[in-house]
Length: 175
Image 1 (spheres, one colour):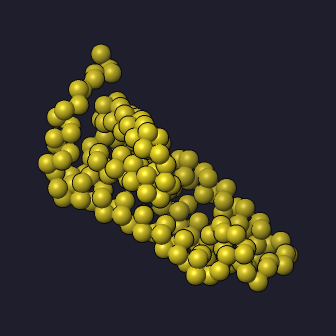
Image 2: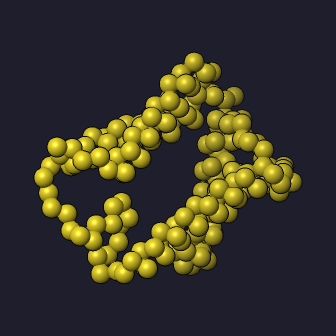
């Protein structure tokens, strides 16, 4: 008998939302639907695969250890306070990223988050943090801004993004 778990419902929600994103974008112009399709189709396929695996595993009769932590991967010897602190740290970084996107926009939030995460959380060296941040910024700018010309939502504080965009040369890839 299949046992319904919270992670199965979460995966089902991801399947539903990603399928909706892909299907609702099918009649959009190519440049507009490219982003939802590039992100949505792999998410849809992978989440459907994950849901199938979760359903299959829930039907299998297996004895799980009493200390099952669900989807949070931790060492079995860690105490519950350490696990809760790690989860809280993850969600704090995620919330910080969303707030940075809201305040400063994607154009600044992505490289800023990359740098801060590498330097503060991962404790990488300065050269590695700056190099990976620069590579992320160049990739992000070239692909999403200059090649795909994605329309970005306006941030709450616009002047930093406008200043950076005005100092970056625009490349015309289509001529």
